[in-house]
Image 1: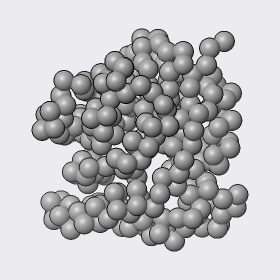
Image 2: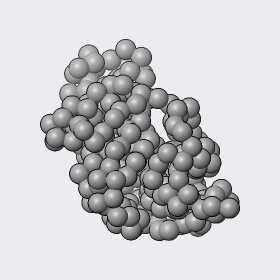
Image 3: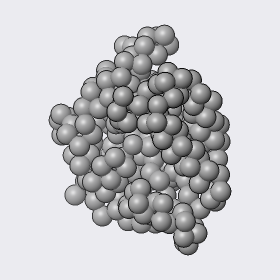
Image 4: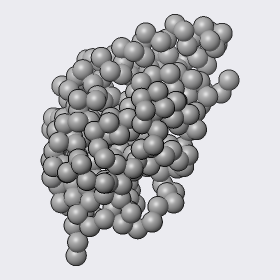
Length: 251
């Protein structure tokens, strides 16, 4: 099995494909100050197996378009939505986030937790802007430096993984320069990484390796994930996901 398929196999059984939490999704929603009883159109871009989508469906009177390029993840989202009685609120769309078939000003909220890095923060906020109504809200989480200086090992790792990692101030500037007015910001706490993402992944390593015959490729993936977890545990004071909430402004 190719590494790409192995990664899907590792992550599709998880509730989350990245750091986050239902409490934090609700916190972000609260900071938008949006009327939760109003009929809304929401796009959840890079939804994975739908942790954020399902939380939004529970909390809002909304029609939600859940976008991910992996049909495997969307199949699980659809199953979970059915089990929770939320299928009538959610439509899934297998599509790349940089080639969305949306009409201009179609959405009240664009939501994206832990996914915008796939195309880059700046490209995402620019490309998705036309799909929001004037006054509509963008809510995204993005890997963010929490300190002005970092240990060289950590800096080197993230320079290689995602060159757009930056401080919250730099991200706010990108929003302000591309048609948004920042509304709120907060940092995902440690439990969103460890309890909600890394520990469940660690608990799945043995089954994952057994499913895949303890192949060398599967072992390499596990070792890479272990290194990432170790890096976070050692340097978690220096970085996290920042949650950015911004309003589209008119001209």
